[in-house]
Amino acid sequence: MFTGSLVAIVTPFRKGRVDEQALGDLIEFHISKGTNGIVPCGTTGESATLSQEEHERVIAFTVEAVNHRVPVIAGTGSNSTEEAIVFTKHAKQVGSDAALLITPYYNKPTQEGLFQHFSIIAKTVDLPLILYNIPGRTCVNMMPTTVARLAKISSIIGIKEGSGSLQQVSDIIQECGDRVTVLSGDDPLTLPMMAIGAKGVITVTANIVPADMAAMVQAALEGHMDRAKALHYKMAPLFTALFYETNPIPVKEALAMMNKIDGELRLPMSPMAPDNRERLRQVMKDYGLL
Image (tube, rainbow, N blue to C red; front, top):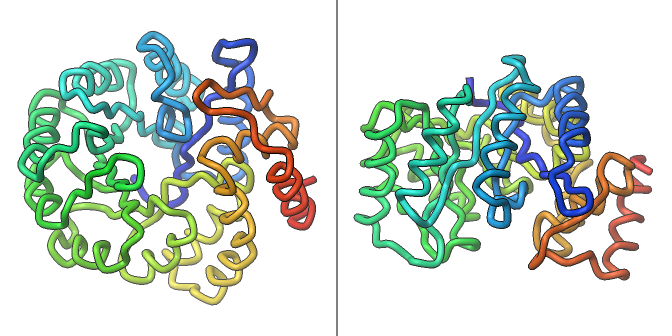
């Protein structure tokens, strides 16, 4: 159920408020283009600067707009275990299919702390849970041995792995087998990760090219690696351009260029530097998006 191209969808803003019309239009865009699942309120969705009320509304709105057509994996993580429980309970209440839980950031828990954090959430809320490991954002790397311990909990069914290490991906798959679904958390590494056993990606790039990302992942799942490789190299310039600056600055700028959203960000995310914006525009022109 939780495989394929799963979009880490942006949260559109207009005049300081969540733009639900634009969000609804983006959801329809994704479903029409073959995206396999919607992930609201992740890092790309600027969850860190949403109020609790906004966070819960975005998830509820997404569930309602998707209307069971594809899975909704709600971003419910926090560096406070109690807050993560609150968000995860709400996600279950409104009908999310699963929750995505980032490792606690800033407070740098030990491996035992990580184990206890995710264990108590799993014991408190009966919902499929996908772990999210991204040391570059959180300053803590969840080790494969910890993932293997957590994989013994039946509701922990997957991990979005963003460490950037194929060895770590390999170790997780070797230790956990089929107990967890490994998803890429790094678009350029999606195909290499799938070559060693990952089952898809929670992706930034699908925000602007959902059909190509879905096609690449599906080709890899079906073993058509030449087709998947061709799509990987086609999208490679976008993989780079969408990280000219901190995510989600470039992807929101790209969507604004495509007239899909306003492009508004919340501080401390600031507008893209003019030179980087022009570099991004050229990549998008070359791709045929503009």
